[in-house]
Image 1 (cartoon, rainbow, N blue to C red):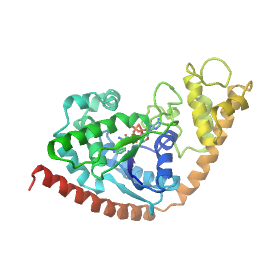
Image 2: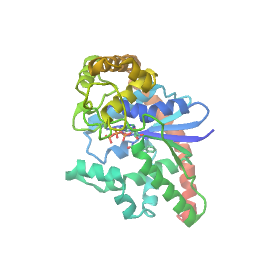
Image 3: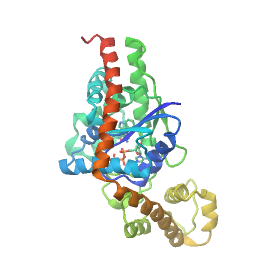
Image 4: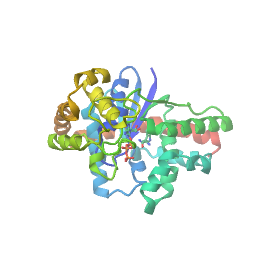
Length: 324
Ligand code: ATP
Ligand code: LTN
């Protein structure tokens, strides 16, 4: 039994990389663990969000959590900004974080290049708020995609530094990265990770894409030179498509290579699109059946349960560092 916590930004609809890298694991981890899963709306603000779109995205991501299998009777599900202790602890942790540590973060380097006209202080201190998210709940394990490993490692360093300065207050968390699916690559560029905020929608398969869109995107997906359906070190595009196909179909990569031997990319892509569509159609049916009022009730209940834990921890932290 471990304390497990993770979160996603409500920056857009979730894509299959978010599912395979993170949420699929969360659903499994609900059994036999204490789990907290939330939506990091404050993190999303580090890139400008239209207010009405942001509100809608928060509700939609919560609905996606439910439709993908998160169970509010097993997990605490809430919205970050509903628990003010996250921002409060982030301030305190910021005072033991070195500028150089934040400058080294690859996500900061990527995001600041991507949004060169709005490199704000929040984008820079983003990992400190994430450390607060994690440390506030004595988290032991953080199931995330590969790209977030560096942030969890910084969180560990901050926890150890704080504990050395003030005595043992924080649990030192570990990242939990799945063996395959931890880094799904962009369909239009297999050298970069699939991302919700990619410039082109051909980069990702959104969980809300319809049948025709999925077919079109898979058809346009970049492939490696040659015609054989085969993975391997020098075949990043096929590796990625085979990984996706394998994780959604339950067939191994080598079984897929055999199945499509000599059949060419076209057949393979048709099979992949059909497999994705079967999953997405079932998911979307569940997604659309969940009422907004139900989502709001679940989030309110989750916030109350999270606040109860966070307030206690915050009181301990404040007392430890000498705040009256
Ligand atoms: P954005 O483009 O807005 O930064 P994102 O697509 O990177 O969004 P996040 O909200 O940052 O998504 O990440 C949510 C979770 O999904 C994290 O655990 C992250 O590691 C995981 N994740 C994101 N992209 C991928 C990917 N391409 N493959 C596997 N896991 C991923
Ligand atoms: N930074 C993460 C989202 C995130 C998170 C967290 C994940 C914010 N706080 C706490 C795990 C635990 C991302 O961009 N995916």
